[in-house]
Length: 312
Image (cartoon, rainbow, N blue to C red):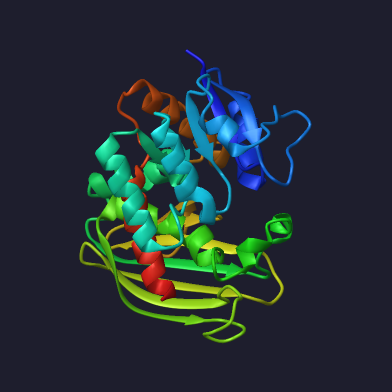
């Protein structure tokens, strides 16, 4: 069966999803709304309402900025349409909780597009943990650095540089908080410090963050920064007593049993793209009501509570 998708938001994430769905037999994006306009190869909807009330739409994918997620998700549920949403659910935790409760009450199927959900990299780390290859996990380190935020390819999404909705803690770190919780367990913030370029009462997104967390008894450290010259650093390391694992540039896996890091998962030529297609395979299972790997709104709320605690 091919599911007809209505897409709200045609920015970077929307375009990426559109292109990947175009290669997947189970999805057909039949309507796209974005107030800033859509690509020529997209079937344009005049308003978001035209998508939300269209009886021919089987699934609503929400890829607009977070301020509109709750409004559109609730409207989709009111029209009995499953929702696939980008994170965060909202910026305000109270609104996100109301959204989760509303979907729980209505029973409307819901899922969130955390990229690690279907990633072979998450599968790899999870299998190491579940099969006891770490023996014990002594610590988890997450390191992020960007020479500029928003990054050059995000220049049209100015809201990413604003404190109200954006920042790399929400945009990038949230994926690693999902990764941590989905493998190692419930995660809590113990201490945190955030630096803003225009002070605590300004409007600009954070430049630096240092946090100490704990995941099911495992110490988790987070250090992030913006500035300087050089390539981005996006790194996740699980330090085991017998074996350690590092994910570099999101998805490239390395293993160490001592003094060196050895490449792992070498049989997967492009784990990033493999994960994107696997995400759609899971989305198809979600639509069929069959077992899948996609996190629901409640899992996304847990991640958001961690992120907003850090930023507070």
